[in-house]
Image (tube, rainbow, N blue to C red):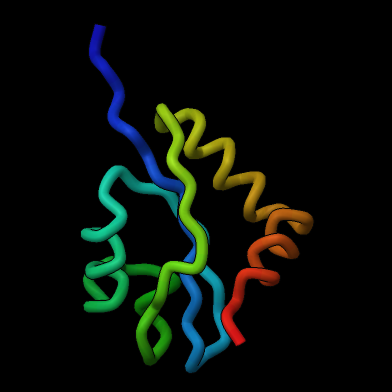
Amino acid sequence: MKKESVYFVYALYNPICDKIYIGQTVNLDERLKLHNQKIFRGYTSNFEGSWVVIYKEEVNSRQEALKREKQLKSFRGREFVKQLIPG
């Protein structure tokens, strides 16, 4: 049976645009570079400025990561993440 990798559920913040992004990945450092270099097409590439990690959580499978990502994208989850914005 294939061993699953450790996944990260994360929240990014762009202080210039005052925007939050929530996602999941196996390599958070690489994913952050992709977001900031505008290589990762989608929501984050539409905004000027840099993204910073304001929250990360390690989980044991992609299934857990997707479930937790969904929780953080809910109203209550977003309220939790908003409290982590610096300043």
